[in-house]
Image (tube, rainbow, N blue to C red; front, side, top):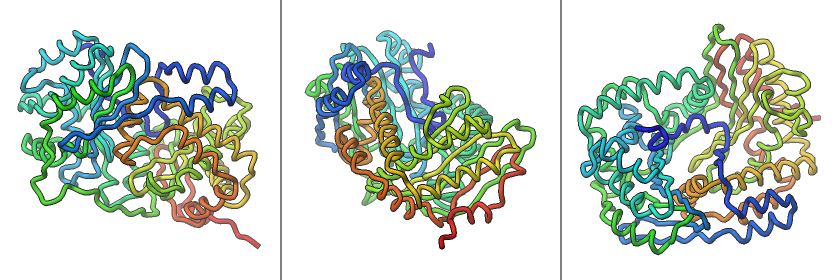
Length: 481
């Protein structure tokens, strides 16, 4: 099949950065063209309303209309690797791989031909808490797009030959992922931070599991988790909400809502463990290191000061960063040449998050980079400056505005928000919450989550110079007179 028609999203590649789309809606064009605060405020309060309708079976239908000839429509499902048991870890990812390989109504070649006939672009991904299947197409082809998505979700064609073919594809993808050290570090970080809990599992699963999963395992997973109340049919672009609801009733109205058990599967509780994983290999040219503490979940209000704190620490990429950037780590990176890449991150889940930093450097500069990075964390806890907070808040605002870059980003945001919060949170509300953050609040929240806490530490590559864990732990507080 042509690559432009059906493909799978690389969630791993997005772990350390915001997803950006290629086409911004007209409202955002106005914002960026004029470059003043008035258009920004105008955009905030004049974005399309999110319309939400719940079908009789509990499936939620949500849309935002933009005057465009294209649209993105997809199904977001509240299930991921965190819902899997250890011996079945990877089954959700396996199911996702089977989605676009044909259905009972549309065998593989017919399915591919029908998608290509309307010039649509299919995509999907599996994360630790969510799974998504979505399609970008011309607005006039919305009925066909929803018909195809409904067929994919309900009429699985789990042929043994296709299962074996996808088994080999997944194993090859896993080998490829192992060569991307940023992915390896991310998986290690979850494995050590949430050890002994399902959140430590990777969405891809283990090699042993992928080799042993059966058709019965895939079927059981679908029957247990693909239920209407856990689904959101989201759309953005040139869509009419009433038409969307009518199409949803027609093609998703029969999605089951009852569970075999008395209650639906629930998220397993997680716990954070301060610990480390070191994977030394001097054959690699650069060391990859990540350090994180436990932060709050999505719905905790402390998430907003932590987003600002993360922006305060900042990012640096030696291939594209401007030497005049004002965040301290960018200045250090540009002037001292200690590292090639530095990224501050805040990876959120329902009830927990990883607040941390990740950097890439040669083996001789690990110690110095750790020193400067941890010093920035201590400054967050002891001496935050209001002018720096103002700059950081604008950085966060820009990241939220990036969610308007194209119908696919907007559609994904709608789906994730309704699964996570039960509603689509308007950009104006995000902006208001960020505006309320001040230096005192950043300092208080960082003292709560960062100061004198045991971190999770991961090092991969030539990491002989990585400080001992006890030394890293001792730098999580400053002696005060």
